[in-house]
Image 1 (cartoon, rainbow, N blue to C red):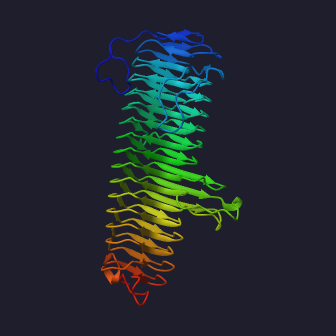
Image 2: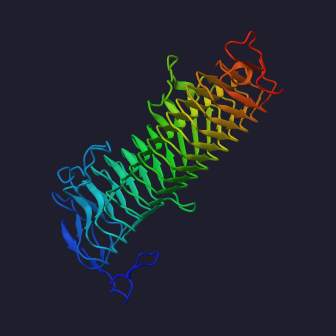
Image 3: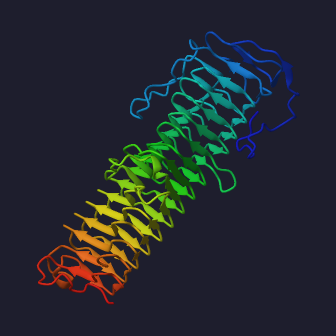
Length: 469
C-alpha cells in the first residue's frame, strides 16, 4: 500500500514488487502488472491503445510505438479558447490512466490518438521519456491529477496542446520536457502549486502555432528557467492568474517576417500578485526580407506587458532587441503597463526598442532603478497616468529620456538622463508641480541631452530645467 508521504521518486513503499513481465500486447488491452513491451501496438482503429488497470505498476514501452488512426483521434476537449475547454477525456488515448496511483509510464512512442498519455483522478505518477506526436488533442494531459512527475517527455505536432494540466491538477512537477509545433506548448487551466522547470532542468516550448506557456485561472505555480522560442503569440501568458512566480525564464524570437499581432514575451492579463524575476526577452530581426510597407503597431510586439493587472512585482528582468540591418523594426515597447495599478518594477532593463517603459492609464506604480538605453523613441513614457513614482531610473541614448503627456501627480526623484537626442525630460503638462507642470521633480539629473529639458505647456521657453545638469 502507498505510504501517506511518498519519497521524491513516488515509488511504492513496502516489499519489493515482482519484476516486470515481457509481453506483446494488442490494442485496448488492460495492463494490470508491471510490463515491458516487446512489440509495437496498432494501428488501433478504435478506443485506447493501452489501459492502466492497477496502482503501483510500471509500463515500459521499451521505445515501441502505440499508434492510432484518423478515426481514433477524436478531440480531447473543446476549442483552444480557455473558456470553452471542457476537460473531458477523449474517446481515445495512447495510454489511458484513470483512478490509479503510483503508476510509471516510460519510453512510449504514441501517435494518432486523441491524447498521447492521459491521467485522470490520479496521483504520484511518473511519466518519463515518452514521445507524443500528431495526436488530435494533446500530447500529455493531467486532469484532476496531482503530485505527479512529467520528465524528459516530448510533445510534437499535436493539434491542441503539448502538455495540458486541467481541473485542479496541482503540485505536479514538469522538467526537461519539450513541446514543439503544437498549438500551445504548456497549458495550465485551473491548476495550482505546479512546478515547471528548475535551474538544473528546464522545459522548452518552441515553434508552437500560438503560445509557449499559457496559464489560465491558475495560482501559486512556479516557472523556472524555461525557454519559449519562436511562438508567434506569447512566450509566457498569465490570464486571471495570481501568486505565480516566474524566475529566469527566457522568451526569444528570430524572424525574417513581420511578427503577428499580439506578440509579447511575457503577457499578464487580468493577473495580480505575481512575481517575475530575472526573466529575459530577446528578439532578433533579420530585416533583409521585410517589405518597405511594413509597419508595426502599438501592441504588436512587447517584451513584458501588463494589462489590467495589479500588484505584481517585476525585478531584474531584461528585454533587448537586435537587428541584422538598420531597416529592421525594433520591438514596440520593452515594458508596457496598460490599465494596471500598484505594480513595482525594480532593476529591470529595456534596450534597443521604440520605447523602453510605457505606462498608459496606469496609477500608483513604482519604477525604481530601471534602465532604458538606446530606444529610438522614449526611455520612460507616461500617458494618462497618475500618482506613479519613478526613482533612481536611468535613460541614456534614447530620443527622449523621460516624457509625460496628459498625466498628473507623478513623482520623479533622483533619475538620470544623458546623451538623449532631444530632451532628457519632456513634460507637456500644466499644473502646480515643478516648473509649472502637473508633476513633481526632485534631484533628477541630466547631462549632454541635445535640448536639456522641457517643462510645462504654459512656459514661455521650452528649455525650463526640470533637472540638474
